[in-house]
Image (tube, rainbow, N blue to C red):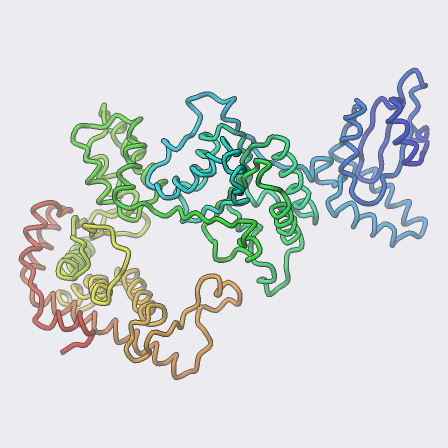
Amino acid sequence: MKTATITREAYSTFVEQVSSQKVLHATLKPYRIEYRLKPELGAKRFYTVKPAGNTDDIPAMLQEHQVEFSTPSDDSGTAAGLVGALLGAGALLGAAAWFTREGAGGMGSAMGGVTAGKTKARTYNPAASKAKTRITFADVAGVDEAKQELKEVVDFLQDGDKYRKIGAKMPKGVLLVGPPGTGKTLLAKAVAGEANVPFLSMAASEFVELYVGVGASRVRDLFNKAKRQAPCIVFIDELDAIGKSRGANPHGANDEREQTLNQLLTEMDGFDGNQGVILIAATNRPEILDPALKRAGRFDRQVLVDRPDKSGRLEILKVHSSSVQMGKDVNLKAIAAQTSGFAGADLANLINEAALLAARNNREAVMMTDVKEAIERVIAGLEKRSRILSPTERKTVAYHEVGHAIVGSLMPGGSQVSKISIVPRGRGALGYTMQTPEDDRFLLLEDELRGQLATLLGGRSAEEVVFGKVSSGASDDIQKATDLAERAVTQYGMSPDLGPIAFEKTQSQFLENGSTRRSMGGEVAAEIDRLVKQSIHHAHEMAIAVLKLNHELLDSMAQKLLADDVLEGEQLKDMLAKAQAPVNAQIWLATGQMV
């Protein structure tokens, strides 16, 4: 057999032959190295067993001396032969040790070959890219405060001497924190584009592998690669994949993830910011990150990238609509007012949906009707006119939605009912009532919370007032009302009986032991349940009182809705202006007590 001609040599002999330019080709296998000498030396074939420990430097040594080498993807047959020989010699413990060493993520991992410990970071070089593909701060809108923080990073990369002369040091890590879709990754790319430096991007999940030690090796390789290209930016997305607090898992820690985190902590604390390597990471779950990761000297600057306000949404809409043919009737200010709570990604999707609708209708430009339809598609889902409801179901849905609208129009909070529809949308919505806030709100007052409870229960209450029985259509409303009433007691401290005490754990505390409630006595738990039930019961009574007082308006609006499927605009506004509030409504909103 061909393998019979292969002679074993000591590893030191192999290294000496490589250094002497005698080796023509080498094959790197999980447990050994096969190589042959150059033709003038007889082209003899040898093999040597790889040394224990880290062997990541073998490929570099071969490249340095211009030795061709390969890594076969499947050495199962040869490996099985070696294991058989070991077992036959009575070396069972030796075979187990071999598997442990090779599977631990050294150079010869059977899953990844010599590339197992190499970084998978993607390199983006603005200087070498086309001008059209280069992302700058002009492409990012609605996050002015975050941009201002990151402009300092750009200035440091472009003119670091100004900071070094005065003795200032740039933060080694910048952590971008914010909800999904707010533009954290886009901001990092804009920093690289503005500074005109290389940008190494990698998701945190790409560090972690099955074999312990591979992730740590990739972290080392990533930072070594970054230092060679300095000044540059390293961006790690979804940092929480490897940055979770150590010891938070009650079922035992993941050794691979923790080793990767430990290596990242070491690299961040070890490399000097004056080398021109800036580490930027993004997460939407900062509360679960390890404290050592957020301490000064590592991620010592946190930049909040929050959902944009009204003016920010307007700027984002201008950016995304600049490449779309917009009609003259499109009012971006009105769209910004109607999209409270939308993130940057949501607004980009909104403009694209409107453009798709305009193209579907063979229009040459996007009209305001396309944008309004796109907003409803994003919020409520695709319109399903093919879903045919029975006359009884349509009537029930119509009264249900009008009940929401009448009660909502009388409650505080600064939101106005802008549309009522009984056209089915999405997976389960048989109708919907759209409320548009007049201004961005950041606090929820007590009376507004009670008003929201009454509005949520307005649909079910209308069914009771008109039909004397209820349907299953209010299940989502009841769930939302129950959650809101419970948060008022357990998180917001709005109960005068229990006082300002937090009975609900934060998300990070909840993740540690799987329970959302703090430890409490049975009497306290029973009191919380009683207060939640009382809040919902009083809101239900108020909704019924409102609808009984406005029974004629409820009937007329429901009949109009059944005829037209949709009520909106001035017609809806004029109808709701006739609604009247019960005399005890203000007392209930102020105190929560029915009189």
